[in-house]
Image 1: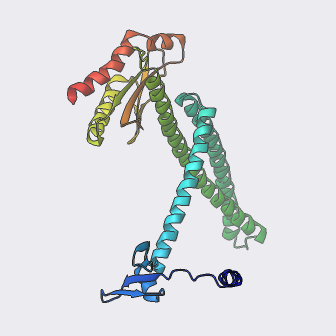
Image 2: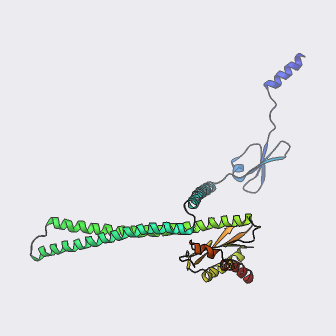
Image 3: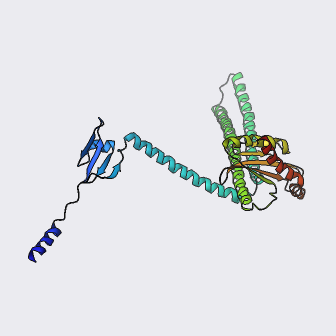
Length: 319
């Protein structure tokens, strides 16, 4: 009994050693090396972990080089940037849908900002013209002194220099105003394109949800079979918009074709959006009319239905 207790005590104090592992790798000459510790060469080339019976229990990839680590860091930064951009886009999408109910709302907001820019531009031009007139008078007075053979007063010289400086400031301001005007135009065009994409997605989702309804109103959707077919449909859509809308084409991109908004009760506008569907890309046609009662009646008429159905018929005929 004493011997048994002694054996148990020894086992407790001195645990049985863990089974030894071995590490297999190829050296620079292509030879397979097996060692009982991880060498720098094994770390560089990658290695396999074997148990005492020679069975593979783990594979370890080669250690990354400095260049690979830098490339991985660069890719990670790009992924993080893409996530931030995506979050900003989601926030902007929510703002667009909250602030605007239609493209006309966005257009009116753009025109209001453009009007403010034009007012600032006009004020700047008037100020510059006034300064030019003052400069001409100051230079005339200086010329009078020179013709009389007398020294031009320092105060007059200072006024001329200061006036020229203010004129240059107005010139720089005109450049900044023009840049701001162009930036506003680009920003609102981007907002219009994105708004129509979001609107088209919602329309496609609604029609897909209400697929049992026969009458699609002012919306038509065509499912592309592949990218090549979608490209052909997009070309047909551009021609169809030009021939059937009362206004001219205003925006043409890879995802949006948009004609001018209806200005009168008899006008109609067409927009085509290319959006990802559940299984394939969809081309969504939306027809819009004037906001008046007569425009509402027009959009509910058989004429609009024929315009809507005419696009699907054209696509099926051409394809």
